Length: 462
Ligand SMILES: [Zn+2]
Image (spheres, rainbow, N blue to C red):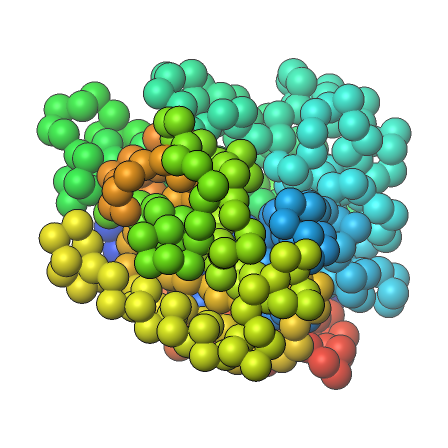
């Protein structure tokens, strides 16, 4: 009996929504849970799309992979950034290893698969694909088929999903999702596969666009806003699409539903560079006129100890003598300064000084190795309830809007895992919490393929 595995990735899907809150409204996911097993999957550090999916599919941590987000410092200059694309992904993903033993894979939308590279099978690249003008399939000639099967131009991502034009975003999310599922069903039907994996990005985009309208505990929530059911309704829609996929597969196929991290409301933002300025760690030559990105500010590097970048977490860098062009922190003081900043950040409360539970991690302490240029500190404001705002010119430290466009959701530590093997029903067994690096060896085991010796994860008994 030929083993097949179908993995449906729901980017940012939170276990609390699927397992508890909306369980009864999602008949297909509920059936997979009730007949299979399910549990939580701890995300990567940091819990963001890049590097999370690649960490899951290689069973290597971000330090070993050498990227810590989509944008990373390319060298120790102050401004050169590089993008983590498929070129940075080592050729040892689940599908690479399956290809070596002759197993065929079908991939659609798996983050960090652009630009496409040859696999034993076929793929449509991910949300980081610039446009349909780029090569986005393997084999290249698959492109025409994708356009025809999707019933319109293929959509990789919702453009400008942090916008006030909510109806446009909703329409785009649905159109994108519909075409992606259509194409994926077409590929499942028409191409030979042993492993098939699709990642839905709409689940992430709808959280960021609509969380503040849907959950009354969000600080920006207002009743009767007309969008209260937008995330719920989209999950119901995705569940229906999953039902159509399940109708395509046979009784030998193991079905996995996975997310790369969870989601939670955003309580606010910490203007991390404003804080560094107030503490004397960052010095500007002149006060910014209005709110500007730090890259546009006149930084007095000869008097600067540290600076940081924004996002769901802060990437904080020290200005180290002999490392950065105008480094100031003596190497002998590096650990002391790093600890001092981490301690002071942990003491930073909300706008009224109440504790929020900020903590920082050192890459050298959480990764097995640290390749390329990691931040000196990874800072989680309010344990991910607060975002890091990198812009300067605010004059305050606490803000209640994102600085790169309206966004109501932050990421959270736990994603979800549902496993259903028709040959081994589990009756809704609840799994212990696992880490997403456990996924690659678990999938390989289904095909009798040994994990690579340096894979960090352990197979899950699902
Ligand atoms: Zn994600």
